[in-house]
Length: 357
Image (cartoon, rainbow, N blue to C red; front, side, top):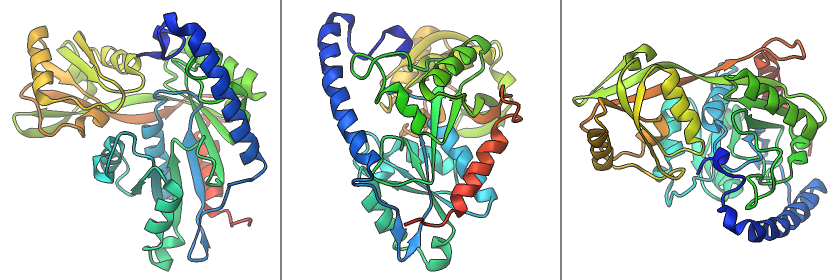
């Protein structure tokens, strides 16, 4: 269900119950955050006497904010700086690390990174990094995927993403709204980045909400731009320009936290969407249902995200187009260039920061 469709994940008929549940949930969040604010239960990641830097990429709302492409960008910056990124993720819905759709996606989008998948990220990181030799361990930097609420692990940099198409900061806590914790918690972030900021009006509104909740402006804004498409047809794969979608009748299919943004990107690429197919976040499609939906709609091709592609056990007969994403940073009102330079500086500083305790 899209965040824009309603104020929270529950139907409007359950609004009174949702409001009560949100108050109980909020009390639990407040007590939990107060404990972490005092440093109770928080520890540095130290392995074999080496303090491993930690960078968190997270958000305040339920649903997609574009974390996966941003994490991949952070990893590329770390590799460029000579570090070894280690992505640590919970692995939603996966019973084993190899079943995580996000981990399989990172194999393509962040090939220079190690990936650790486990709900208990602290223990899993200790176990995985204990097997790394001393020279490589000294280069490791952990990148927490969806880590803002994972406060057991101390971090050297907290990056919070806000989806400009649906910021959610003016709403209620779950399940009455989409907030995982109060909007004011964004003040805890070291850096705030507005994502999917292709629309000036949406960008302006999101910027106002961030400034109100944080007490100061965001640090950077970026678009999730498509720079190419991978085409899977007849058992072969090729790369084409985004203009290969122009004028095509397509089935736009996704199982993402923000399906509206994906469909919008398909339309901006010039494709003609004849059917939209949406499943819950992380739910896999089957080749049979994709072919059937495409055929029923008279679609010439199917457009899938890479996160959905990696969940397929085989390719559909219908040609499949998969967009290749790149972050494009926009100007910021503070006059600090496009914001990417501030991000790079903060990432580099976090990567070399010595363990304080």
